[in-house]
Amino acid sequence: MSEKILIGMSGGVDSSAAALLLKRQGYETAGITLKLLDSNSSAAEAARIAEQIGIRHYTLDLRDLFREKVINPFAEEYFSGRTPSPCVLCNREIKFGAMLDFALENGFDKIATGHYGEIVHDNDGVHLKKSASPKDQSYFLSMLTPFQLSHALFPLNSMTKEETRSLAREAGLSSAEKKDSQEICFIPDNDYAAFLKNLTGKTPEEGNFIDADGNVIGRHRGIIHYTVGQRKGLGAAFGKPMFVTAVNPAENTVTLGENGAQYFSAFTADNVNIIESRYSCTTFEASIKIRCQAKPAKALVTLDGEGNMYAEFAEPQRSVTPGQLAAVYVDDFVAAGGRIISCEK
Image (cartoon, rainbow, N blue to C red; front, side):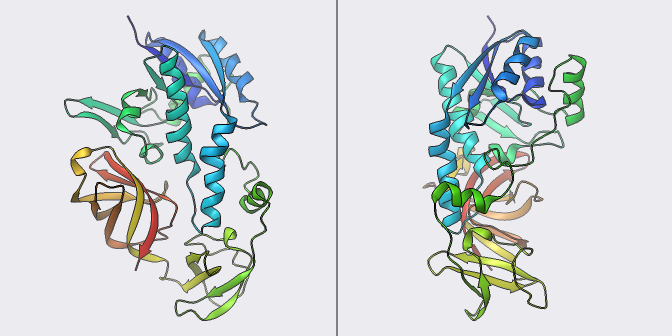
C-alpha cells in the first residue's frame, strides 16, 4: 500500500510540478492550499491544477494563525531593531506545522512541498541536505525539526527550475509559465514601512544617526526603515559611502560607519534548532550562510544545547544582520539554524 501524501499547492509551477511527480510515482496524493491572507486567490487556481493532475484538493483557512505566528512577529522584530525572516517562520509554524498537523489528523503519512532540498534517512535518523539544484532552498528549511523532516517530502529535489517548468509545460499545467514571486506574500508592493505602519498603527519616531563613538551625525526617519549593511536610502549626504552597522531601538539610534565597518567577525544566535543532535553541546568547524544569497563562510561554531549559538568566522563577513537566519552546514548537511541576535567586530 502506497504512502498517502498531502502536498501544499500555491498555484505556482514548483508545487504543481511536485504534485504531478508524486502522482506519477504512485503515491496516493491530494493537494491542499493554505488560505493565509484575505486577498489570497490562489486556492481556485490550485484546485484547477489539482483537477488537471487528477487528485483531490483541500483548502485550509489559517489566516488567524498566520497573523499570530508570522505577521505579528515580523512587525515585532522590525520595531525591535531586527530584520526578520518571515518565510523561515512560515515554513516552521505554518507549512510544516499546521499543515502537517492537518495531514496527520486526516490520515496522511507525510506532507510535500515544492521546495528544492533533499531529505536523507539512515540509521542515525533524518537529515537535511543541500539540493543539487542551483535553486537549493535548504537555508529556508533549516529551522525544521527532525520530526517535521521525517514527515516531509521534496519531490523536486535536484531538478533545475527549467526542468520543473518543462515538466509542467509538457503536462499542460496552467502554472507552467507562472513567474516566481520575489516579494514577501503579505507585502505585495514591497513597502515594508507602510505595511508596518498600517498593521500596528505606529508611526516610528525620527531619531539620530550616530557614529561608532556615539557622535550625532544626522537624523533618521525611524528605525523600521533601516537594516544592518544598508547603504542606500539613508536620506543624508555624508560626502562618502556610509553603512548601517547597528540599530538601537532603546536609544532610537542608527549607527553608521564607513566602508569596512559593515564587516563582523562573530555573532550570537538564539532560538536554535538542531537537526544533527551529535553537535549539541559541542564546538565544531562548519560553514554558515547568514543570508539566503550569501556564500557559505567557514566558522567555528558552539551550540550550548540550550537554544543558543556562538560562531566565530575564519574571515570577517559583511552585513551580519540581527533577526536574520544563520544556517549551519557540515559538508552538505544542515546541522542547525538560529536567529542572529548580536554581532561582534
